[in-house]
Picture 1: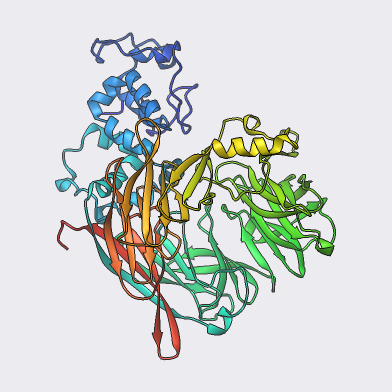
Picture 2: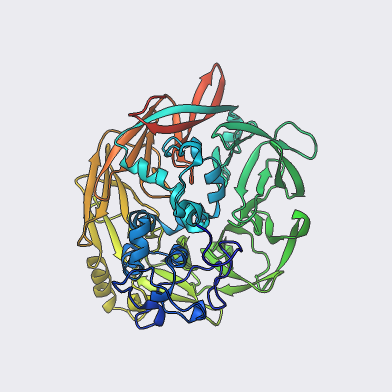
Length: 621
């Protein structure tokens, strides 16, 4: 079947008022394009002289409807169902509903990152252990496969069939793949430093990983080819040294760059080449801590004896200094953090004469500068904790006030004027965190220690404000806020509370060896879906980026908990070995698990990285 529109590219603009790249939203009721399809056959012929953009939705060819339908965005199941009512003939003919419903249930962060790197996923899809086999000689290709699969969203859906197959699989078999080992420096382990002892850094595409740490003698970078095989690549240091200790690293989310800081204080920008990475630029800043923004556009350097310096990535991959307007003199930051949009930067430092911690918010002020907006902290307040939301430029802050042992918890958010306004949500200090998708504020602590507490965030912060509360109304307001919590009750003390990326499930670790997974039922109420004691974690567990798997690990075992449908989880796979330190999912290649472990060889301690591949336990090698 030929292209019904024109001989140009499939993704080109269809009409002047239809954008080529931005997904169209679901038409509003009453709009000419929102009229439901009649019972008449979609093959009804209409006058050819009528321009496409003047026709109603009922008058468009089904092939065009298919293209429009694929460009729509779906945030939840309700939007999928509503859209499918308007496009029901397309849905029926090309069987979209099941695939789109599954796609819509995945977290937004996963969908967006997966679509950005779907080309690489397509190239290696045939080697995915859960991929469907290709048709013989590539014959008998359907209209959807020939036309629709070339559209961005449909490509992601076709590749994510592998994830849906993993969810339906009852049990996994773990197969060891690539392994690298580095010796541990006992001397550097004794030093107090904020940089990680050992860590793994994944590229946004999941096709590269860096094994590094301030206590490792060297570093290793691995790359996965289109056949799914991992191999080591070399870092070509500008001074031709064979290897260096890397203390901080980040793959750029926007460009294919690797940013590192070495133990010597060199900040290097790496570009990929043929089976290696070349050193494109270097800045030497000894005895400083480095924080990279997620996109790789900005960097902050600071230290106990070094003033804060902000940088931006300029042309030729070189770092350029930026101005900071309004920052008090003599500030030596203890902590810095970028907001999700990278438009703001939080600074935290110790005040002189032991007056407690102080903070300021830096906001971008043109391409080459940041300007300071002080936060409304009490002069004798001590910042107990501060966390940015992962999805919005909002800062959750706990403040302890002296000399009285009280305080408050507030959310700071930027106003159109540029000022950061405070909204008090707790009139006393209470340990709280944002959930990943920003739908909840939660705490691992309760009076008994056996419950997890959740508060559903309102759409407007003003609806949650306790700014007006003063004594004696303070105690009453505190009690009312605590009573409004969703309480998840357990029989033993809670150690860890972890949301999945879409805030739809919770993993709770209780002493001594119990893991609970909570989810919502059809009524929207939280209930325990799975309880297991098969793999009690001794390190922090983690969810996969898609949210359908969770990892728990202790010194002798890694457990892979997988979702079976919407209401049940089970232990699907296990890795058993001695000396396990930590385990990670490869973010976009969920069939791969990376495990760090420790072994002794005489007086030498070695840290090993092992890549494991998840396969269906019911299939042979």
